Length: 318
Ligand code: NAD
Image (cartoon, rainbow, N blue to C red; front, side, top):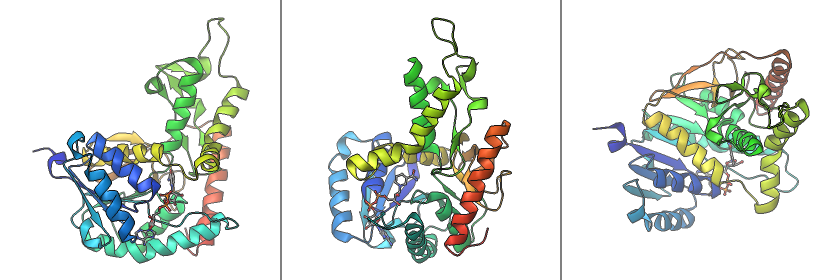
């Protein structure tokens, strides 16, 4: 029997991100049972019904859910998307404090219901929440991590592939650091196929990815969420499928390398930030060491300083 046959995924939060993640996981068959949990009973029950009605066409065998945390019991993976959204006039740091407080109330109880689960944070600011989670409950290293820059890296690869008309699957590069304004692209090690990205030439034999173009692609990734939120109020589909992809790496023990947000990396072991990490059934098996050029190292240092400040601002000490 494969791990999928008995796997249970819980998605905490039935808002736009949680439901998109559950929907993606259901379609892709990321787990055999998906539980959706939210404090808003009416909303979560309606979402579970709506998702259930597509069961005939889905790969996951069943979707359950409700406002009683008991529905989460015995999960293999718990993805946390619950939290407050930024309100007009509210700063990011106010939001961080509010979401950390929700996490403090919820996480110990979730761990009681699913003591063996891997916990994946999606709620923002995801690196701060991931770090806080490692302080709130005492789980082995790697069992708690954040979705980090998996979504941002997918955005990056899509933009690069679209620029030259090559499949996104043949573009190999990652955004790393904070899931936020100080994140950056690892251009120095990026490849298209096996060709170094900076050496990629067009039909005219000229270098395509000039420093200016690389800066503008990186900027577009960093500002993607702002643009989408302005147009539709939230980002949800791409984070939903990115989350499902991470869940599959865990449930399927895929040993995939993903830029998830993790504590214990050599970049700064005391905080959570995204670095390429080996992900399998035990969660983050190992954050990997990276070869960065001087400019990237300076950006990493800036991202670390930003995150250290954010963590301290919500009352935790790295
Ligand atoms: P939303 O407001 O639509 O949904 C949040 C849900 O959380 C609501 O249904 C609410 O009832 C629920 N909730 C609040 N407190 C709860 C609790 N104590 N227990 C259970 N449920 C609770 O918000 P959204 O658009 O789904 O976004 C959710 C989070 O995901 C936000 O913090 C957002 O910034 C973040 N996000 C992260 C990424 C990423 O890449 N990490 C991408 C997009 C969004």
